[in-house]
Length: 250
Image 1: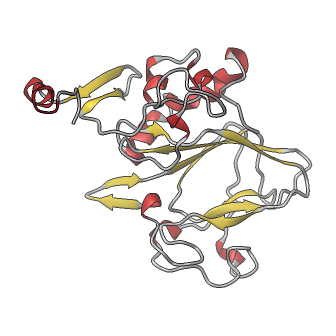
Image 2 (image 1 turned 180 degrees about the horizontal axis):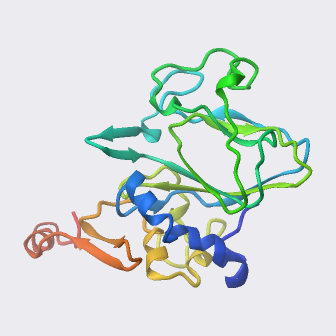
């Protein structure tokens, strides 16, 4: 179900709050660094009882080919964790043990090998595929470098969860931010999300909609208290670009 940022202030406010929620900002900073950004258009996943699952995918190493997925990289250096693309599942209903839905292969973000035959469909080695039990309102953060998918839905209650993807300041996987109106002409700039995304946002939420570029190039950063600061280079370096390139940025 798409359009969750475009339903008007009353219906979309809660979904937009995830962009810079005070409980989540420290976690986003810890996994993505300051200047993190929305990378995909968020949407709601829905399944009725008996709905089929979704094949395992993702992983720093492709599940089938074994090729390295640099755009889903996960790293940990000197105690600093970074994920090139972070999934954020906001659970809108309970997902009890055995209900199905979102599932992962724990530890697969560190894998160096493709999956054994039949595992991507859950036919073989299913004991290594786990479905987290969650309550409505829980948030599951996962590196897209972790192999994940969905099990068939078994509950009588319709499955519902909102899925967001976030990235570090300089990373870009999706490209929806290139046009303010995806199906029409841009009304803002050539580097904008659909225009209704911007309605009723505070400064912190607006910062998360910035396109990919480095923090030092006047990027708005969210402080821990929810306020926003602009990170920039020295006056000398900024003047250098104007003098040499005749532009504000190199």
